[in-house]
Amino acid sequence: MSTIPHAPPLSARTPWPVVGSGLVALAVAMGIGRFAFTPLMPLMMRDGTLNVAAGAEWAAANYVGYLVGALTASWFAGNPRLGLLLSLAGVALTTMAMAAVDHDAPAGLGAGLRAAAGVFSAWALVCASGWCLAELARRRVGALGAWIYTGVGLGIALAGTLAWLGGTQPASRLWLELGLVAGLGALLVGSLSRGQGTAAAEIEEREAAAFARPPRNGQAALVLCYGIFGFGYIVPATFLPAMARELASDPKVFGLTWPLFGLAAALSVAAVARWSKHVPRQRLWAAAQGIMALGTGLPLAAQTLWAVAASAVLVGGTFMVATMAGLQLAREARPDNPTPLLARMTAAFAAGQIVGPVLVRLLGPGHWAGWNALDWTGAIATVLLVLTALWLWRSARPSPESATMFTPRPL
Image (cartoon, rainbow, N blue to C red; front, side, top):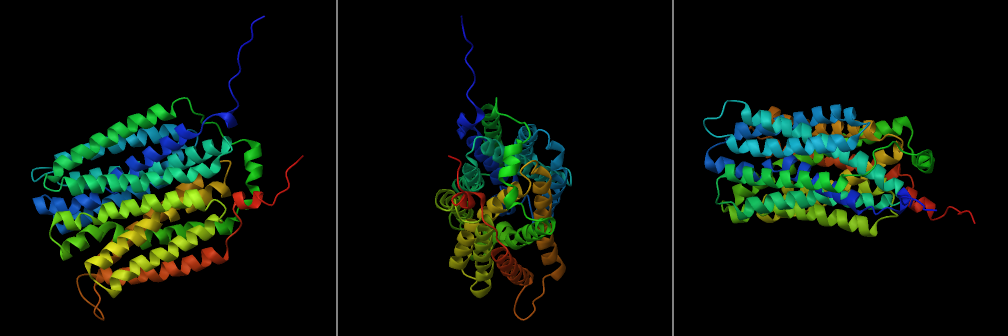
């Protein structure tokens, strides 16, 4: 009598296709779709296809699109993998289309493409976090979820390195090259994620994380802290290469700030994933937010190239740790369906990003007490980051991994 072999239980299946899918997806969505404009902006200004005012408008359009994407990402709560694949295809198409933006392009085309890229990037971040973290939790390897966030730093470093090495090329050609890379990444994610599950979380999973679930007012505070985080990091994340360009005109010099930012992001997340499994995620977020405050405050004390480089390391080395810890806290708070809370946190983050450049513009070109608009915005961001870091540290709860170390196991 023949027997039909049974498929291995879900917990026994290898998690690496899921980790690889999340890592590549965030590299494409955030490193290219979200942040490629930062190293390419000074090159487009050099080519004469962009001025300072248009650059600010394009950046603001991307932030608004990111907010819209965060608010609508819950559409994919039932099948986040589908939302992830659609968003990655959108990132690739909008990035390649940026190559067509030149002197003769219709007014508003560049801003429209950047807005669309912001929508797709937010969808990808929410869907990748919601889907990958849930799949890894079902395989009982939830700690591996930290590794997917190294993709953001790797994507930033890749885009920055391409812009640095190809700095003598027209920016339009670099947009096309990055769009092709994004398309290949989208195909790779589709291949790696094929055959993986999309079902809702199991009852045991919900019960396992119930003890770490913060109350509703705690969830609201997490959303607020995440929004302030978005406000705090956005000035260096948007203007670091441009600030370096004012101090050194050679693209081989000022272009290094963005790869440095991305490399610091990737290495910091990898270090946290490897050595901080039992640190409460809220305290990890608090530490990252505090160090980020040092990075935003440093250029206020010394407006030199070394200060800009140090700011790139400090902010780049903490912004993805804060992102990872915040989104994992959302996963713990709503293990049954984290996508809505992830979307609210991402929306608050996007709103904070919008407030930063708007405040710079409202303050205008004048100086007060020797500081310009960027300086005052950085000072406000530094104070708010310090205050939220203190609250996050004091209100931290144990992480599931650390708590299970002291929980008796059944014999």
